[in-house]
Length: 333
Ligand SMILES: NC(=O)c1ccc[n+]([C@@H]2O[C@H](COP(=O)([O-])OP(=O)(O)OC[C@H]3O[C@@H](n4cnc5c(N)ncnc54)[C@H](OP(=O)(O)O)[C@@H]3O)[C@@H](O)[C@H]2O)c1
Image 1 (tube, rainbow, N blue to C red):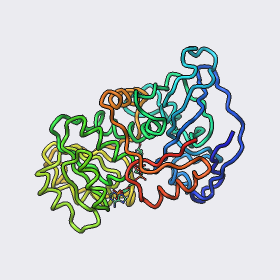
Image 2: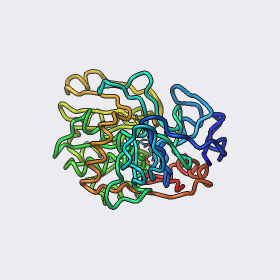
Image 3: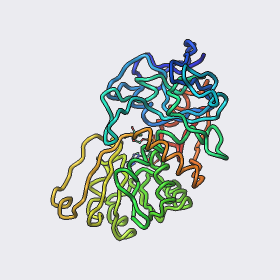
Image 4: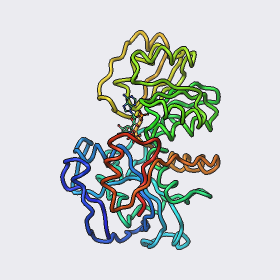
């Protein structure tokens, strides 16, 4: 089968479409004939070797959707032929609060979705929600799971909460926007592009500010009159701006290092507000199933920016790298 394999960490162009052995499902596993994969910023970090636990060569890609085409020993026969999406990682372990040391993502260290087939545990697959295409389903797992855990498990977002989401063009940010709006939150966004802010407003956000403008925290505070929850993938360039606009008891959830890994915390601004800063990374298989059920129930179709073929997978990674996207970049297989 064909797979996009990264042999050396020298950027997206160093990944190559390669003939690799067709995987056989082990006990308790299903093999999926992939129809679509979706990209995440993670592939870019992996492609330059900047991801914990690097192991190469690896087939890239964490998100996928397709049809179950083979079953391992002990797997329910009725799964054969089902259209499914699946948990984008493996080995979370028993503690719902944080993952076990063996935890890892599909697409390094485990085999990825930019391939014709993948084997995953049968108990981590979920039926594609009614009315969703393979591409729409593939766009959900990693970004949706990350956003769900930030909003629900960490920040406990409630109806009427004012939620700030940074860098709205990003995949996790876009998922957080549609989930938070469906939960009845009042959502504000940041972006480097006015068009993306306008699109976010069309999707239900209340307003937004351009992070390329100096001191954007002031217009944000004026517009929102206080923020309860922040879902932030770029704290190094955002935290100091929104800090003074946080409400008492605010919850800030950090999930990404865009713009740099280090940010300064003004301690009194945090403790006098009784604010909490959380870190969050992906989530449990149960979080994934709850997110998928919510998305299906509310028919929250993800925003798809652009679609490529497997032959164009490197172009798709370069497109993501250049940050043109508003929503997810898909590779049809
Ligand atoms: N913790 C986890 O489990 C987890 C899961 C997924 C991703 N991540 C990390 O989270 C980050 C985003 O991932 P993704 O896949 O959603 O990314 P993505 O789809 O590649 O989006 C990146 C976005 O970052 C935004 N951005 C760039 N500069 C910014 C700035 N100065 N301030 C605010 N936003 C800025 C841009 O937003 P605009 O286009 O609106 O300007 C851009 O669209 C990455 O670092 C990724 O590794 C973590």
